[in-house]
Image (cartoon, rainbow, N blue to C red):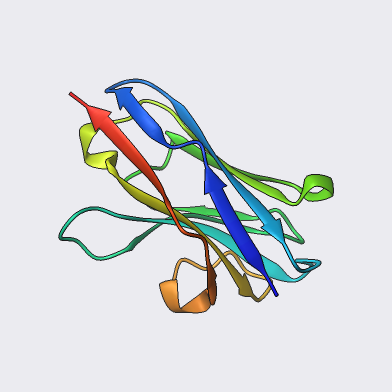
Length: 124
């Protein structure tokens, strides 16, 4: 059974940086896509970034492109989200997600396993 556990969230000032981590277990993850989504209060969950476990191909939301990098360390089964130049509008709960399929999907319904989320708060 696939399990995902996020960590690394916190409070940071605008312009600062954070690195979120997602520990994946319970599977080999070959052929999986891994994604990061976020949900702000009163808003729907939205796509942030995704990566193909096999190819390493990545996709980013336009709102974060150039500021955020998603990466995988295969041997450790870790997925990272490096966030720089953070803005108050990046404040949200960030979720790690896994879905069967070779492509780095941007669609929420492509993912069927979710972590519990980690809070990121960016102060102005």
